[in-house]
Length: 146
Image (cartoon, rainbow, N blue to C red; front, side, top):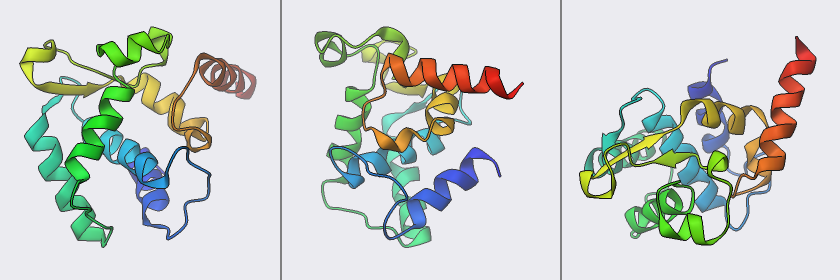
């Protein structure tokens, strides 16, 4: 099973097999962002991301809330290494899932694929905000499997 299958499996359940904080909707937006951005290492423009997420959600019958774009942007900013909010919360830079590869003015969003893979493999869903402990635990678990 690849990550797209895992994301679809998680997002297509009426009740995800994890407890997302602070909300299941926020967590589903994280999964949506990872799914859309993972195949594009250079990132995508915001409008393209929103259009793709909307299309994907409609295609599989997931809800498309009226304020979906606001929610997705909030989630992106909460997990983006380049935002002031992320920095002010004192989050370790290596825990960010997203970044602006062309700077804020560039309007391009991107995912750190290696971090997204770790987040997904670690059962990311137990938290809405990844932290250094989770990254270390996941890295240790992958070393132990070798």
